[in-house]
Structures are given as C-alpha cells and as structure tokens.
Image 1 (tube, rainbow, N blue to C red):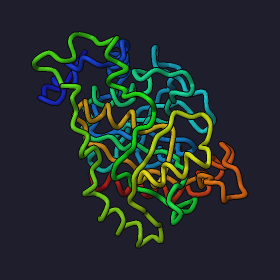
Image 2: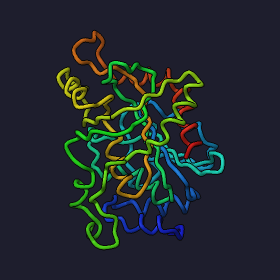
Image 3: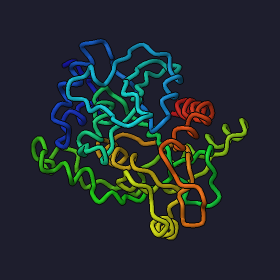
Image 4: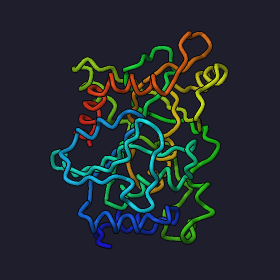
Length: 296
C-alpha cells in the first residue's frame, strides 16, 4: 500500500486499536484512485448536504467497500466523497453507523481511521442534536467546546480485546489519551463572526452523548442540564475520542434539530422532525462547514 512518508502517517500505521479491515480498505481506496487528503468531515443525520462544500474528484458508495459498515438509518446515504476545497483535499463521509444499530466501536470509528490513514490531520465531526440549553432553538448551530461521554463505554477500552498488537507497547500511540482539550476551540470566535455576518447564530457549548435509539426522559434532560450539557446526541463523541487517540485535531459542529423534552414541552421529538429541520437548515449548515474548512 502506497503511503506518505511522514511522521504522522507512520504513527497512524502503528495504531494498535483499529478495525481489522482498515488496511485492506485503505489499499482498496488508494488503488481505486482516492488519493491522499488533508482533512475529513463526517456528516450526521440529514446533513449530507455538506458534500456540496467540495469539488468532488472521487465518489464511492460504502456498499462498494468491502468491510465498511453501512448505515441503516434514514438521512445517512452511505457515500464517500473526496475532492478539493481550495488548496486542500478533503474527504467527506456522508453517513455514519451508531451503537444503537448494533455497530461496535471499531465500526463506529472506522471513518476516522480511514481519514487518518489517508493522511488527514483534522476531522470535522457533524451531528444533529437536541437542545438542552433553553436558549437554543432548532435551526441554530452549536460549536462543540467539550463533551460528556454517557455512552456507557469508551471506544478505546471497548477495542482493547481485539487490539492488533500491544496498545501499551513503546512507540505506539498510548490509549491513555488526555481529553482536556479534544476540540479546536480557537476556531469558534472567527467562525462565529463570519456566520454572524450571514445572520447565522452559532453557540459554543458542551455536547452530551447517550447511546439511543430512544430519546431522553424528562428526568434525563434535567440531569444533563444540571451536569452542564447544552445539547445531546447519539454519536460524535466516540469518533472524537478515537481521533484524539490517532493524533488528529477535532472540530465539532452541530445543528440543533429539536428541543430535548424536559417535561414542559407539548411536542415530542422524532426522527422525522430531526430530518425536516436538518433539511430546512441545510444551506446554513453547509455554509458553516465551508467556512470551517476555510479556517483549517
């Protein structure tokens, strides 16, 4: 398999915690002309419109990639795009698999593993979220400053049993990852200013993750609010943790698609509402991703 001759690429190749098909998938993509990349983005529910941010040079359905997990949920097309954004080559994964679909941590984090293997040094993780913060409204955006992992597991811990080699061996990326600074928070201010000029409201907040597929109980919503969460989702955090382990910089950008019900709301959240609100805000969110790429 052709590889970049760089310290980053060498470190990625030594990662002990990885999907068993990772290297095979990388070889397939490179043999089919995918080429190397500088950054990657992962599209959340109903957010596949972010594919329009690049000039596509390479496109492949997940189902055409042996070993690549295929999303079962509406709003996740299951397609890999690679193309140009200015002087950068960017991969965009249109759709992800979730724990509630039965996917294991190696499958959930596989897009990040592939992005790292293709040379990306930054990954932009997007998702549709429910608002915990009473000031947030559907259609607004939230920049992830930190997270609360309430999945019930850490993806690195969960991948230990199937580790390739000794994850604690000298010369490998340690799984004892410092998570005190997962996200590139220095990008918030310039991004916020740019979007404000377009009348797009960008919050900065803490993202909580629960395993799903059920939405939160009123007691859980109140608990999350008291714990400091501003929004909640069923993804993103496992990928962020793995990206940090792999040495990638992480940007978390989310779209508020519903309000989490703390018992005071008449409306009930649904996946239909999530997709409808994501569609309504597609242009605004795509612009936000485009401006994020510009800042990288």
